[in-house]
Length: 74
Image 1 (cartoon, helix red, strand yellow):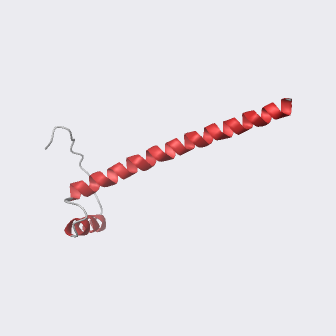
Image 2 (tube, helix red, strand yellow):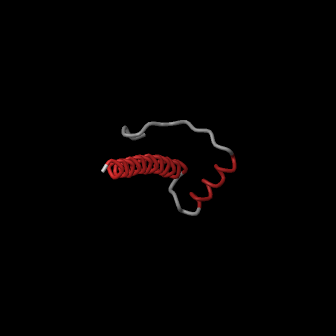
Image 3 (cartoon, helix red, strand yellow):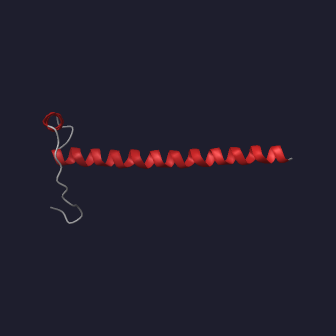
């Protein structure tokens, strides 16, 4: 195993393993591990994008509230 990777044991339902195996057999991925790494990257990316979206939304709402407050005061 490469020194830049850690092994993470995971248990999956048989149906999911079968679907992963089909993806490997179809040549979509080279191995189950490759498919699971791809899935893990997608989860991390989606979580990052969701948090980024929430931060942007919070900032936009705050900016709108501040502008409305300034208009009310003037």
